Length: 445
Picture 1 (cartoon, rainbow, N blue to C red):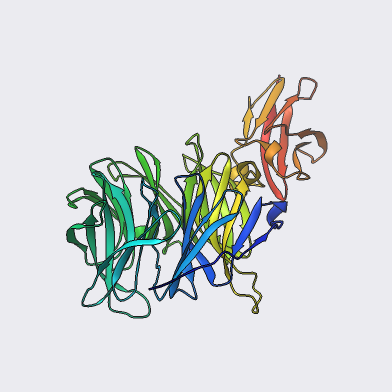
Picture 2 (picture 1 turned 120 degrees about the vertical axis):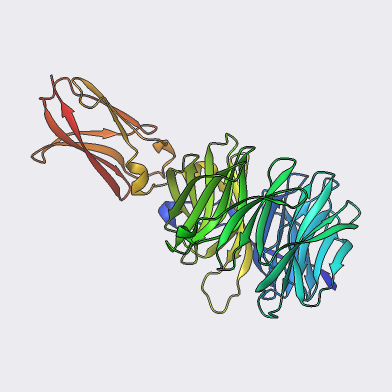
């Protein structure tokens, strides 16, 4: 394996396109680094990114500050990082699962220097897909075995358990299909997403002896799920797409594996999720027609807002910290002469309350209705955080279409004193940007 260290990066400060949304910055890594696969916070407050280089036959690792400064940048030639993740051990070392014709798990020092490597040779081609820390402390990795040299059509998956010194403790056949992700549940169980023989996914709960405790499948959605996320100690989420609905899909489930709700939305695919410090707002990273969006959603599955991150970005990973969202992905400005770049993006949480979809406007509360004097109009989000220059008003008409009163929303709320207004039926219209929602209001004495 050949290792090369480089430090050249390109940093662009650009204005994002949807409703004048702005990122704090977009940092583009140097040319050979063309796609970010995973982004994690490092133990020292920075971020680690791993991704593909040279069209996938090499991979890179880099550490970057929250301000977009590259601290070090290393890549490894002749190896493939498929859809793996990066794990940082408590001592600061990194574990990176990868492979091509054999499964390999690289351990590096905090600066990216290679220290050790677990390597497993199979009769067929294989690679390590995912790795996570389990009680012990020990580690558990998925080894994917496949026959196709060009793209891994997985024949079976092994769970490989190893200790702090990278000694393999156990290798056990998990399934005759692909395990796309895994996440710890309690200290005695974990969850996986596993591909069925039909090419769709199920959510499997296993104990630490790897025995299956539950297997949840919802065939009506034909789910293709690729990422698991933790909401709190009792709730989790699985992300991907519904083949039946041809839409992005979010499945929220509890610690037993029982599904709490399933939502499908107008994205091609949900790639990852983050949650704010209150635990009440989910940020779903989605791609649609080669553009990257962030959808804000409450824990009940109600959409708060949609924001276009950039129409030249495909997002892969997202992380929330101290009021900011950090995103890693692939940036391609559609210039045939310019290759794609791995990208690192920082966005302020407040900039994500953008013009919401009509579905969010329908959550306008109007009370009391009927009323004899005052009436309150209230939205579930703060309109002061909507982009400056965007109309945020409520216009009231009588039933003949004549305007009666126009109200401006302040922090998502407006109050109308209707004491001197004649009893009748009135029509209110909420307008935010290009979105409108209307309803009836009854004034009576």
